[in-house]
Image 1 (cartoon, rainbow, N blue to C red):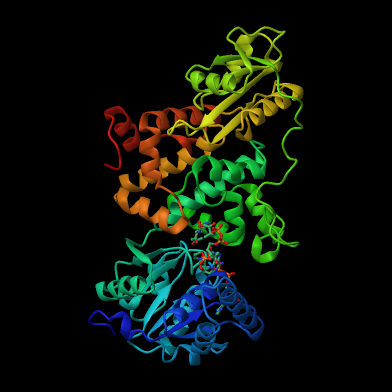
Image 2 (cartoon, rainbow, N blue to C red):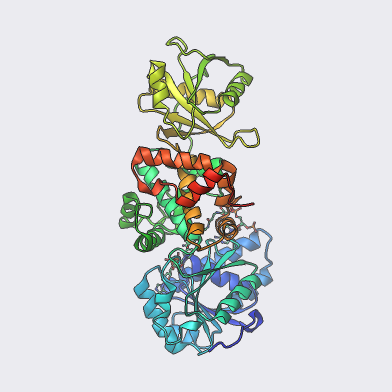
Amino acid sequence: MTSSVTQPADIREVAVIGLGLMGSGIAELVGRSGRRVVAIEINQTFLDQGMARLRASLDKAVSRGKLTDTARDEILARIRPTDDIPAGVASADLVIEAIPERMELKRTLFDQLDEACRADAILATNTSSLSITEIAGATRYPPRVAGLHFFNPAPVMKLVEVISTVLTSPETAETLALLSRDLRKTPVQVSDRAGFIVNALLVPYLNHAVRLLETAQATREDIDKAATAGLGLPMGPLTLLDLVGLDTSLAVLETVQAEFGGTRYMPAPLLRKLCDARLFGRKSGRGFYDYRHGTPSAAAEGHHLASPPPPAEVALIRDPDGLLDELASEINAAGISVSPQPSPQTGLVIVAADPRHRVLDAALAVGHPADVVGIHLVDVADGKPRLAELVLPDVTAAGTAAKAAALAAKLGLDTVTSRDRPGFLTAALAYPQFNDAVRMFQDGFASPADIDIAMMLGCGYPRGPLQMLDEAGPAHVVSVLEAMHAATGDPAFTPVPLLAEYATAGTRFRS
Ligand code: CAA
Ligand code: NAD
């Protein structure tokens, strides 16, 4: 039993149970810190696979010059693989469980650990979302049980969520926070609530990306590009789902759905179907992308519309808050003449689009809607658009869309193509997550600073969601969310009361 804070130096032997995606990374990380590791799997086949993954990761570090051959060999010598759970955990100071995200498996294992571990060993679970209180309930001494939640890839991502139940002793939580720092991670301490900080925000966003795909809002590549080029995230949501594993993501969604209800966490049917087909992502060779012949390129060529030559003249109108001047100067700078008066002879009518309004209304007002395409410049904060969303009402002619793509290419703009629904692509992905982040703060679960740090260190966000919300402007975010709500009828997009309050008061979430 722990009655005082165990220092990281006193955690000399760590048993890692489950050597899958996460367990192999955690075992590598702990082995690199100089500690002994017992790497435990359910049978020899999975043990061999897990050790092969771990070895490959170390070999990669050697080939990149980040690790010497000798250091790799020393790390491997400290890792003892076994498929005997009771013998494997018997002398461990700390056990980190990383088996599949299923409560019955975890409870059975913790019941077994209770018998097999030393009485003063700390029992940690790497669960993504399950109730740690319920897992601890399978043991006789819940004060020594806590969540120690690493992020994928474990050796790389800097965050660890240290999760305490109402029964976890402060000493256990403190030891795990100190250990995290010793492993060169940043701990964020939270209480036991489904999805903790990161997954409660990340997984509904991933799910929404799947909904956008299955409702043909955009191609998978463009959905991913909206996140990387539009929001500056290191990976698009569909690529990230493939990295995390669709099965794990679905399990997390089901847990947060059971805890919070509502439509936001309801798994997208396509996600469930891919899981039914055992297309779990990278680990099974196929998910949203196909990895069987190597890593697919981030944006497959040829999915955009075939480009005719760019038009010599376009008509440009505003809808009604789009950044007309920004777009007009971009087009003029490319040597294309801009007319403010659309006529059927102009050929291409560009609407400077705003994610609060669908383009269709402006297109119908023009009188020849088949010639109309919306262009929305994303992120013009520093005066240089990173990405243009080409917004196509269903009435737009294919030839018109191709001319708009040619125009964007001539302007040197990176583009994604979106159907004409409020939010388009980038805001549709990001703003509901900002809303969820405000709800988390409103609930008193985490501070804005902790939320932002968690998303930056756990998922590689360049800035946290609440900082991004401040930059976009709470009032703007509220009106886009309201437009998404009006267009879909989905209550998930209703701005939470605190966001509406901040928008009215002109207050920021991060000072
Ligand atoms: N294992 C070990 N190291 C790895 C690795 C792996 N699987 N993948 C990448 N790396 C290392 C590389 O070796 C490289 O190291 P050096 O800089 O020392 O050479 C470094 O990471 C960067 O790798 P790359 O240059 O190959 O790739 P990148 O720059 O595109 O970065 C990434 C890859 C770090 C994964 C980045 O794309 C990223 O941050 N993606 C977001 C990942 C994310 O959101 N994770 C959280 C998922 S949610 C979760 O985990 C919680 C849950 O419960 C589901
Ligand atoms: P995984 O499917 O890749 O690996 C799980 C491993 O556990 C498998 O190798 C399996 O053979 C093994 N296993 C199953 N039952 C076992 C048992 N009783 N004893 C020992 N080993 C057993 O899963 P994963 O993605 O590594 O996830 C593991 C845990 O980590 C889950 O709780 C998951 O939610 C969590 N997590 C996952 C990620 C991620 O991005 N995948 C990130 C953070 C946390």
